[in-house]
Length: 468
Image (cartoon, rainbow, N blue to C red):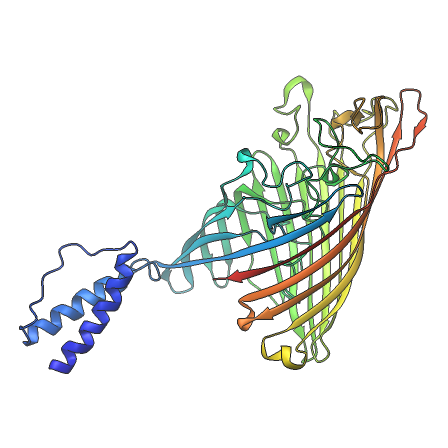
């Protein structure tokens, strides 16, 4: 009996440590050290069971709760053609975050649950620039990414409601083939907040109204060019997996709907294949500054994007390709060019990548090593440049004292990257180099072409991410 008491006491001590970080059990009865009777151990077992049932790992006896997250920090070295600097940033390709997932079994194949996720926005790499290395106090702090509940049936699928993924969100990512999207995706999340610099202009940039890289490399509904969708308040349906395929559909306030089809499956023993395609239609007028349905305004945007990825498992060789299209037929963009009276151009973008992912020599004891490189283009991504009329006031570029209209743009990027998996994939070390070029097509009020050569942008970032 004494041995049983000792074992129970050890378990109680362990549970008490958990309680010390935020949990407590009320009305716990005192236990006398000299009382070694049968009631002692029964009482200890009961109290330990209560403590274990109310820890964060289990939530309560009916709802299992899991805490999860990741920390993803990087050092960014950048050169905009005139200025060079080094920043410590949060990697916006897959930002630092934490969250809670809960699940409760109802009966048979039916279950219900929730997800709440919070993101750290301090020094986000997608918003820093030449004059702001920490995003400024207005953009820092914590940000709610997810807040939704679901009803799930293993055979029928899952219905979600709240702030959740749209079907098209993340459809241009890797679909679990190489899982390198946390290191880098197709979008320019490391420099899109930086200001464009004219060639030979070596003084300070950053005045109000000056263009940023994101304003010539984005969809019409987003600051991204590939992953143009995001999380929104609404309802959505996600199907069960069927021979590798999953389908999804959703409606989101105020008036956005979309659908997507994804595929992820091994082909025999040697090949792993992933693919996805998504579509969204936007009628939410709050996405536009002239929104609210006032003065006859009507928003009408359509966007399509997708990807395909394949990996040969014996050698580790892989290839990836992504595409994105965005068009705007809103009433305030039809024939709206301030000087040309032309409609907004259709945006298109594509990205191709190849590499190898496998265990190499002594590094193989740590995990997979991934080398990759690629090239992308973003054409006419002027959704954020000049509003519906594409009007750029005088001094939009520091060396251009006249007003212009932006007709179109082209952004190219080539890149090389390395990712080293460690601790069974829970820790990754990485380094990526990117070289970006930009061209803009401008005309003045007399429709004369206005040349405006821009400096290239070079960046290298290295860092680590840890999952928990």
